[in-house]
Image (cartoon, rainbow, N blue to C red; front, side, top):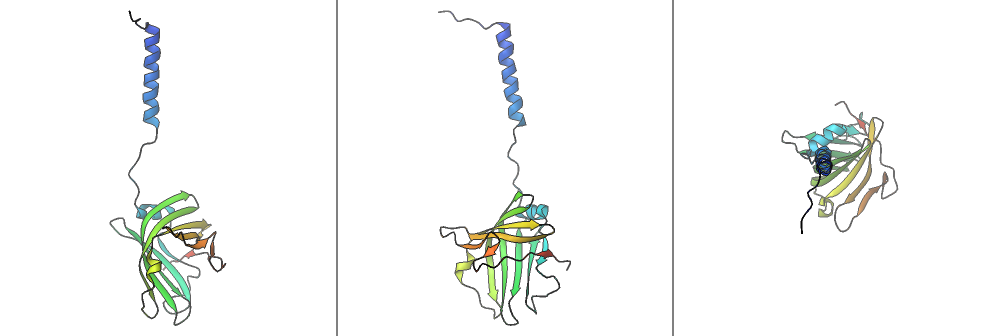
Length: 178
């Protein structure tokens, strides 16, 4: 059985398809080096200190502040202080393990609390040291936490659709200059 040899027109057509396939493959997005959480926080504009009222110092009066910090090695964390009264406060240090910009208004972070203490210096329950996923939303020049839940089988929801479990709306945070 003899095999027919393709004519010049068939070879040119096959060659065109081949080069078109190579060109398309070259134009496809390729995986790039993943950005560190620090790079993502910087790009989104979260680095710095945020508060519902920057004029209040939660170290001495009721108020709240969260400060997003970056290390030279690309690690990111935030420190927060929430003072409910002169004698009742919670301070935390949280490692940001992952950060992803979802769109121009939202960023998702995966965090692991490293230290949580009360005003009396007592460590909080181990329940709160589990990994959490937080979505923060920009609203103009301010932001607020849109959702927060544990990343485990319990999927315990702390904040949903901008509201805490008690139904209270999450406050808008403004960027502080100090």
